[in-house]
Image (cartoon, rainbow, N blue to C red):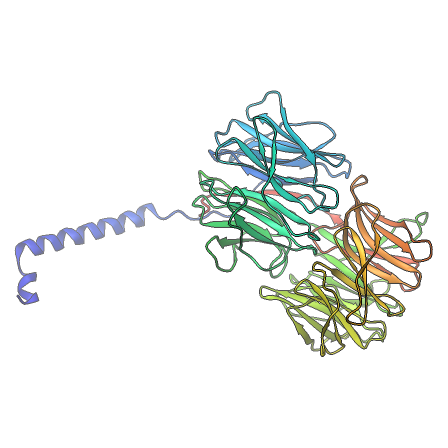
Length: 577
């Protein structure tokens, strides 16, 4: 039958007419009703202290978090806020740090970790108020900047916690809420910082967490709640500050330093590349997504840091800022003659290399990559070149450039980072695939120096015989000629090492974290006495950037980044999909 004849039949015409009416009705309805539009972030509160570890109640109507004041001596306590505009109620008190609140699946209780004197207590508190109950105690995992470390399983019978131990990487264990028994379910490699930020999928079938290597970076992994079927999602080795599941369980939202600075990202659990959410401002962290009401919450810390200079002597006057801008100033480096300083500044909105004189004057911008994260610059021994790395989504690259504005950077190496010069300027050292390497100054003829995975921060001794590098809790060294045996040089004083190190004629300066004093400490290891002593302490360090310092060539002064102003904004997004 011809199509024209079919279309003239009354029944067909009636059906087509009804379909047309339905289509018009649907269109008009959608135009009238509109579609749900993701709202812009609004500020729930701002505080001069620190807010972290956000967690939504199962019904999405309450938000729990940890908060402390501005003083380094203030402790974190748990607060609960009713959304969207309720007042905050404080749930815990005391001198210990209460962090990582997690709601029971029925919303009746909040679990938290209480950290004090190297120990962690898992505490359960009624969500509507009442006496708390300790269910377990175990060694606390140490880290410079505290990371999330607790999640409640969907069956309500166990909580996932981050545990520590002497000279052991952090791992995730399950605590039985009825009897406090502990069962470890992840096994991070030795020499790494371990596993953090546990988060359970909405259906309870998958555990997501971050695994930190020997460096300050991390990646996201998923596994079964038993620890089986481990699968790696990201391969960026970048700083991550919290992660959360979307209500469908298809994606993870996380805060990470991908590209230029910290941003909020989203990645599908079945694979793919992270996608920028384009929601956050300065340095977001600790994202939480509600299972109901489509809400996203996160913290925003618009910190401004400067590079300060202070005398190395403990009895000398306090330091003063010499590099200050509208953004963050960090990763300072003295030229060999001590007359110039190179550092990283994000005052233009992108992290770039800048150079000034030794008092911070006559500043000029050296690089203009406008996107990738720029690593700490290192001066060549002749004071003409700057060596640095770029971190792109695809990995690290090593560059060098003349220390003059308008110079064109030259790429030396791919898939590499942490490059430093030899003292004769003929070679460079760098990290690649978890090992330390040596190459010619132009990047040619690379040769592997270390066979132990996890070495980081390699710097050559002044006599050129050894390359010193940091492990998780020790300083190691390896001969600068390939094939030499690696050996532990010395242990650090405070048990947790982080940040840069710098060799000197008589010893090594290195950075570590004193948990008792809550301060970054620059210590000096004397070759002759084989002992370390504290040379300088930083109480207001900027943990949003890679930790580094620089002692002047004459040994009199030290450069370091310090936060000049800081506050935490608690941000909420409605209609988050």
